[in-house]
Image (cartoon, rainbow, N blue to C red; front, side, top):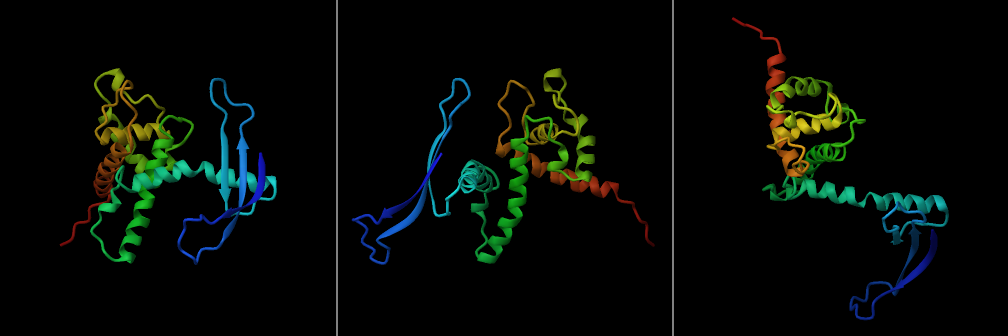
Length: 211
């Protein structure tokens, strides 16, 4: 790993005179020394406005950079690949901000399902409340196919077990030979589950007769 402070000159063809003649940045080069067999070593050259004068600061910048793909996935989930927030007909900035905050909680849950769909060590509680888990338990037998190939292969109460159920609600066949469920399928599945969960909660409530 190497770090250095650099000055980036303003391009000669930039006509806007209000820009400074140069900007001061920190350059960071990180290269993987012992990559896994058969894989090219990672080699990153990064520029940042954050101060990088020691190893700890350099590692922090690398951690932030590693998050870039998850950030891209989050935006993709909010947009066309998932919740289609860009299609909203809201006009005021305040209303769009509130909608975005609500959508973020759903987008994060979808990413949790995608990230954990193959990791049985993760618990369902990461993405679902206790009541929602109870609802999933009762739903599970109705979503299993007629053949063994359409059975849920994951241990109950694990996150991939829940992801499998949500994907089935979203229209996924459940066959192991099929591609893993993607974001649109999980979005549709979550919508279906939220509707089912609302009815399930109403069914759990005590009926009160009034005269």
